[in-house]
Amino acid sequence: MRSGNIKRFIPIFFIAVLLTAVFAVSASALEYRDNGKLRVGLEFGPTSPEVTQFHSADGFRVVIFDETTYESYPVFETAQTDITVRNTGNKGALYLSDGTKIYENDNQAMYITGIGGTIDYEDKTYHEVIKLFFKDGLMRVINIVSFETYLKGVLPREVYASWPAEALKTAAVAARTYAIYSLGGKHERYGVDICTTTCCQVYGGNGKNEHPATNAAVEATKNQVLAYNGRLAMAVYTATAGDHTESSSGAWGGDQSLHPYLCGVPTPHETPEEYANGSWSNTYTAQEIFAYIDSKSAYSGKLRDGISSIDVEFAENGYARFITVTDYYGNTVTAKNSGNVRGMLSKFVKSAKFTITPHYSEAGKTVAVLTSAGVVNSEAVPYGHMILRGDGTTEVITASTAPVSYTFTGTGWGHGVGMSQNGAMTLAKNGYTYDQILAFYYPGTYITTLSALANGTSMSDAETVTENTVTETDVPETVIPVMPEEPYVPGENSVDEDYITKIFNESIGGMS
Figure 1 (tube, rainbow, N blue to C red):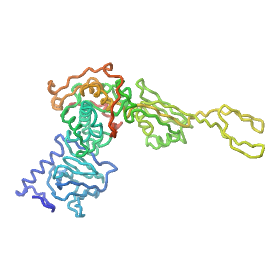
Figure 2 (cartoon, rainbow, N blue to C red):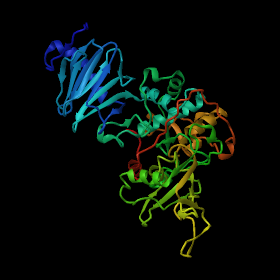
Figure 3 (cartoon, rainbow, N blue to C red):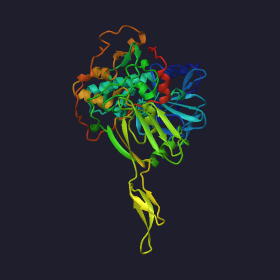
């Protein structure tokens, strides 16, 4: 029976009295490591904290897993509701709320569970397990969680719970597919599969973050994923596409034939002016644009003093595919593919589907004028006028060739590839089912189960949604969505460009 005191365990496995406890916790620890769980990185990388705190209303259990011997053993159990973890180099020290140090590990992973099943961390509630390990002087905080539980923490942060059920089910299948596709991916060097931001998918934990409508969508589509030609699809998605989605090769380069379902499709049903951040127009000075581009490591120091011109090449679908920025000395910086163009201008545009309008100064040239009273005034002479100087010479004021500001006007929010979250909502409001919506945004794909995909077996009617034949002509032209009064702005699934380039040139096999 637990008490308010710490219940310590001795890591000696041959002591008979501990066999039952060790077996129970050890088996759980092994389950935490793998067996279908997702490693969600809550804190990792250079910004990881030195000190962090956890809360659990019913107390904690801590299990240690030794990654050199592959043995696990319980360390302690306590009914106290708060613990603190400090990074002490490549070690982690655990303290109770009164400051008592109760454990310090040595190159071992700690698995912390709330006895009541949940742990509160940074104002969010997490189910299952928090894993802590320390490497390269950094603390890594990871939520080890089942896919379905994870998805219940994703959907409320990626879409509106008030959207039609078919739109929520569309989001659930896409998010599940993307999460599984991410296993061992771009964050693997940190020991995590996926992060909690728009870099991957926005994850807010569980508990109060969950919503009955989004939970129902996860449960209704349990184990369903999107596939193409017998392989897991890369189901990237975006907040809003405007009137056309972007192709994967147009956004990130690579071989389009490896992901033919990310080809880009017309979306005349979308009404971006009705969506949050769906259409936008902003003006910035040339100096602001220069300073922002120069602040990026890829372009820093390559331009001098300012910008003399910005030249953009657009694809037929309206996405900017190539940009050249030139300074007054002829130095240039460039970006190829719409993902990189959006990255260069990310402070000024919400997507790479924009137009750019230069503006020139209307003030003309300021000159000193000596009046008949002997007073010298500064006067602005407009462009197109002539100055007659006191020495008899003249000068025609001509416009500067360098714009002083630029206006960016565009539609869409995000990289534009794959499913549009707002577009899916609009289709659902018009009676389309989630399999039809997915087939529209990912042409040629179909919904199947993980087991069928993993085993390479033929897919029965019970576990496969037949590929649909939704075409552009089936899509309604105009629908005005009804948004909640105080909407949570949907996130977007943007993907690290280096990682995308890499995986676009690799063949992804079936699950094993």
